[in-house]
Structures are given as structure tokens and as C-alpha cells.
Amino acid sequence: MYSHLISTNTKPHLSGVAKFSEIIAGKLSVPFIGFTEIDQLKKGTTVFLSVSFFMADIELETEAWRFLSLVEEKNIKFSLFFHSFDDLPIEHALIKRAVHIYAANAEIYHQLAFTDKPKRNVWSPPLLSNGLKTNDFALNIFSFGMAFKIQTKLHKLLAAKLKKFNIDYIIRFSTGFHERANFGNYDEFARQLEEIYGDKVQFYGFLSDEAVSYFLNISNLYVNFFPKGVRSNNTTIFAVMKKGCPVVTNLDTFSPHWMKKRKNILDVQELTKEMISKNALSKVGEQAMKDVKKNVSLNKLVTLIQKDTK
Image (cartoon, rainbow, N blue to C red; front, side, top):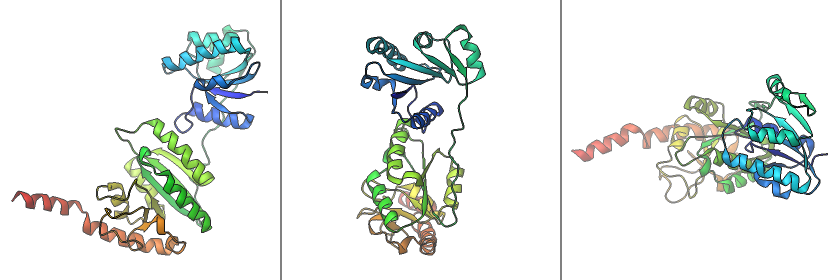
């Protein structure tokens, strides 16, 4: 019946409205697009709109008005699902042309009492995933870092090796705040990682230090890749090693000299099935904890700085 689902929100990892829209589009077996992609709509088609204009966005409203012009031009019909209603001109204009209207809650339905268009008081279903996946037989992998630094090429290599080794695993991703990062980065890379790891990946957004520590404690392995290789100022890697969690990463000639492959760290390029048995990983983690304290401690750095001032 519908050819497309069009939503005001298009980042499922950051927006409940977008997540709802993506799920409903999947159930309807139609493409999930934003208002900036409406030029692909054909004449006489019927689409489903999932909208929320509660946050002021001039660009979005402009695209929505353009959609209404396209409706006239191509004789497009549409149903309208309101996640919020703010009595805006664009909302009233959409209502006038809508064939069916759905209100996500009773308050919105009450606000829409003025229109005699066919409407329903409905709901938004639970959108959370199954939550924390745990499996005593799975390899629990965790990754934490800046979204814009994620190296998808090396993640593809890791995923291919885990598949080849027939390893049962779950990989969890979180990201950190950074002045150069933005929410769009995270959503973009999340999609790429979903393509790589499929249903074995879970995303946890922005986590506090305490939450990161929790996931490291329940993980058998930490993964993080860099454009060239680990450097002596990649503090996340050191923090993970200090907690005794084994690390898989990429190394080169400029990586810290004290990092020894298969001893206190693992290089994804040389990864074998034997290296990622839980027993082998435990030994790597224990050695990593000792070596990071010995080589990159805060006190050691301060001592060097103070020594140069004498």
C-alpha cells in the first residue's frame, strides 16, 4: 500500500522517532527516508509520514513544505503519524492533505480534535532491543573510542577472522565526547559497523567512566584500531591494559617499544584462533597490566618532568 516511509528524524541510534520509523518501515517492507530524499517519489504513490517538529528546525520545515508542493505536483497521498503536535503551520498544512492521521498518545489525539479527518489514538511500541546480551560461551568484546576515529577496514578484518575461527561472540560499542565529534558521526559509523558485525553488535552510545569500567570488567577482549597504529598518547589503550583486559589493535614501527605482540597485546593482522581462547587472553591481560604500570605510569612521567627542571 505504501511506497515509502518518510520521517522528520533519520538517525535511529540517536532518536526514538527515527528508531520507530525505521522499525515500522521494516515491518511495512518499504524504504525509510528523510524529507531531503523525497524527489525519488513517483506520481500517484502513497507514503507514510512519521513526524515530530517539536525542535525548531527551519531547514526541516522548509523540506516539509517542499514535500507538500510535491504532493500537489505528483498527486501523492499520505498517512500522517504525529509523535508530537505543536500547533505549527506546517503541521496544519500536512493535516489538510493527509488521508489518515495517527496520534501517538491521547494528548495528541485530543489536540487534533479540530480536524474531521479520519484519525486514530494509537501508541508507539517498545523500542528497546533485548538489552545486554550475555552468553557464558560467547567471547565478550568491548570497544570504546571517538566515533570519527573508527577504522572500519580493520573491523572488517576482525569480523572475517572471527567468522573463520567459528567464534561465538558479542561486540559492544560505545563512544566518547570530543570537540571534533558530533552525533552524526556516531550514527554513520554505527550503520557501517552493523553491516560488518550484523546481529552480533550492540551500541551503548555515550558511557560514563564508571559504565566503561563495568563493561571492561565483563569483557574478555577490548578492540580499538588506529589510522596507522597505537601511539604512546593513546590513553584509552593504556587504561584498558591497566585494568587487565587484553587488547586487539594494530601496531607499527612507531607503536610503544614495550608493547610485545602475543605477550601483552594482540595485533589484528596476526590474530589466530589460539590467541583468543579465554585462557590465552587472560594471560595477555595479566601481562599487559604489569607492563603498562611499569612503562607508562603517571608518577614516572612526573618524575621525568621534574628531573628536567633541576
